[in-house]
Length: 332
Length: 251
Image (tube, rainbow over all chains, first blue to last red):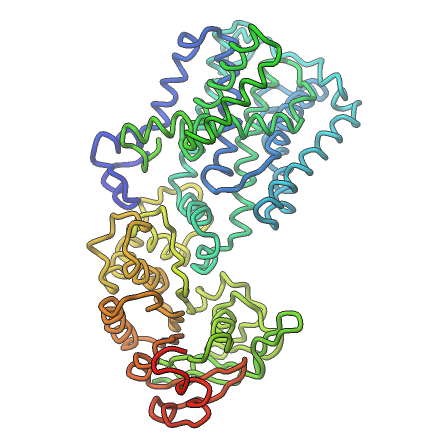
């Protein structure tokens, strides 16, 4: 988000109105999220869009921008939630200490999984991430004295939050939404910085042509590991938000179905677009809400819709919309 | 012409039981254009892949400016001053022409900075544009690379290799798949490039090679068959037998 005069450097139409949209993508995204509770049928849905939006946004860094199809992102979503819950419930930490520690520990987990998985490519990468994420699931299942096992993690609540001297009642849904939105805003700002940075150019190059990126002098394996960790860090923040929101951590969060849902959300919304993950999370959750009203087999219908998207709208809802508006290349 | 730039000492490469290269000993002086020719399967590409670090030799040593290169990972070769282009066009298809070259220029300075704004690295723009200018692509800088013509993509390929200002430029069949008109432009470009730096060229178009190079190295079945000035190569009976005699122009 810097001056448009240097925007030419990345060959984007920075001087036009569309360039302004790109430069202000974080602020515009925050503005949309700020009114989201009044656009969606329920407050609860809006909070979930916020949480899953952050998780999917972190995943988009890995899958959309770097082109690495991981089936194990739930590990970091879950890790963020579990670490937050354990830090608060077991060690009595305040939320503002628990969240950074949870993100840090989840990033270490991402480093461990990344070191193994980024050595492989293509379908092997996907399979290794899936397997290692399942390993995390079983560890959480077995270590029940820490995690609560299959009952999930309980016994921690955040009912009020101390914001610079003000006591905010965290049980009030509106307060809760805006506190969590601040986390989402932080994640969006961080992601936008990464994408605008020199490292953002490196991951683009790796996505476009790994062999050539290596020949140009980039350490592809190391870059992949770094992006894997950054992606895990952002997704784990979504997990922290979920723990604060629910005051429980369901074991299902770590299950591979959650990983699959993250992949579906990013494809529904539009991989490689900045706001697409939030659109994808919202569409998926709305579909789930609406269809499950009249049939318990909602997954059949969501699955069918997903297949139609992959076949006919490969750029997802937001990506297709941006293309139609002529902002395809810039992708705010 | 300041002495030897790269020395190849008894280099060989095996793929399982197949011997792709064996006992290649050759050195290249700074500041001249040398071509590497040979029939299909002679080991030219393997040799190039070893020189650019994409493959590690199974035997022998590689010295560049007196430094041993064996064991160095591929991505470090550019930092040493060795840069290459590919036989099959190998660019960043969805990036603009300018971004293609710019990201290559960036590799030498910053890789892991996630904090600064890349638009602020303005010196990279100037370097990228200079490389595009050198290959005549500056007017196309804003276009998406995959929409360029084949000849222009080949030129972009060279600009990507050129922007690191390599001391040794390895070009793998830069005129592959080109028509006569595009080939003429490429030859002119190659002549300009060779004025300032050391260029190694793999080529199939015999007439072009003999006219362009100061020196020609001939590989056959993974071994060094001949090495000398174009005239010597033309009259070398071994070369005529395995290569030139087959057909005029193509191997």
